Image 1: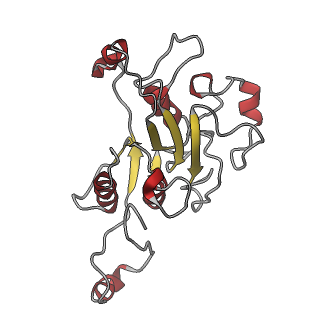
Image 2 (image 1 turned 180 degrees about the vertical axis):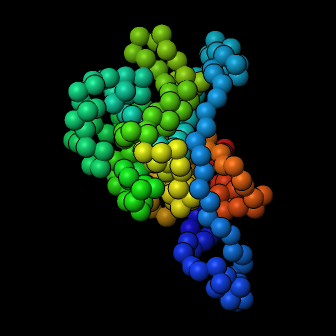
Length: 230
């Protein structure tokens, strides 16, 4: 309702022309699936030099649309306790575990088994599963900070929102969840106002095929018009 004014439906292709003729239909676009991809490092983009000048991202809020974030990791606001991570149920929020001072909010729009099962959203955006880890890697590059200061991401002072839109069991990212995640980034507290929209949305998926006017591109462009860096 915010990033993209759209209704997502699954329909036989033979019905598309009929639906397109309905008076309130502006356009019909396929909802794609995407692949996660990651490259390059902090010094390569000049971030180390910016940090040395005293700029570290403090006060900036970044929504990471990916596989979630391991908010228990020592670089991402947690204690770095492996046993705590292993015992954590990624479908529920254990008392006192989330949010953290670094990962200040988030939601999982895909669940634990997509695409082997339908999307099953839950409130816990922990990046956990046999195919997980990409979102945590991205989050660490964006804003990771070790307690002793020896490890710094691009903007170690920034706060993060963990938005689960990519699989924990494969490299796929749900087109439906990506649109829901964009909407979440524009209204994290779900009050219908974009006054609390994040400052930056980060996505690092790709695909072997894309369209110039696909739904995610439209949602991204709308978010930019609303003042969010995508």
